[in-house]
Amino acid sequence: MRMFLIICGVIALASITGFGALGQRAALFPTVSTETVQLTAVIRARLRSLKAEHKFQPNNYPPLGYVGVETSEEEKLAVAAVDRVIDNILGQHNAPIAAEKVSALIGEGMQQVDQLATEDRDRTAGYMIEIWYILGFKGATGRFAYGSAYPRPSGYGEPLPPGWTSPDHPRRIG
Image 1 (cartoon, rainbow, N blue to C red):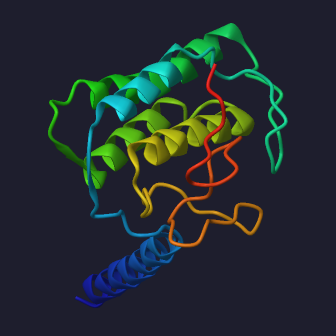
Image 2 (cartoon, one colour):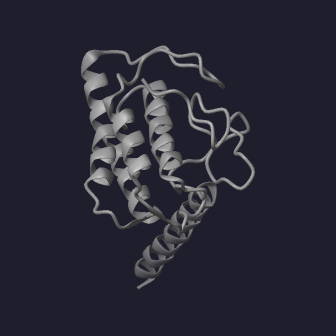
Image 3 (cartoon, rainbow, N blue to C red):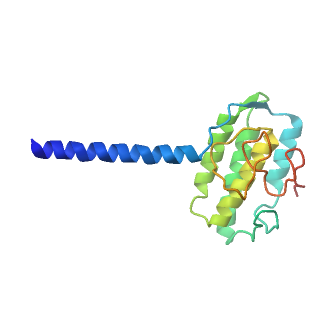
């Protein structure tokens, strides 16, 4: 009986400690936006342009720039992850699309690149946030946590995508 009580105590302590760690992790990530946006012809055209772009090329966008993807195999994987998100969004009817749905697509895309180098995962995240901004969402994706090197514009839950100068001044795609 004594051994049973010891085991129960250890399990209880482990559960409390584990749940505390989960709570700390959850506090780092903002809550997903509850916004809904309409897919317009302009948004669709911008997404198509982003899909057609030769992605993962070196750039000097602040704060860190990007040297390019390490291998052609990794480039294919990263491009496919971004393009899959765009394709899923473009496959929606001309109806409103919820931020929660796009956030889930972004999460799936980021899982596909989780074994790539940090810089390539970060650049993938930049493309995902660019999709978020193109759609017109202002709240957070709930997928990323940022340090002080990535300030967010007032009223927005995500930092500007690489190359954007303000929420209404995107980079030139192409």
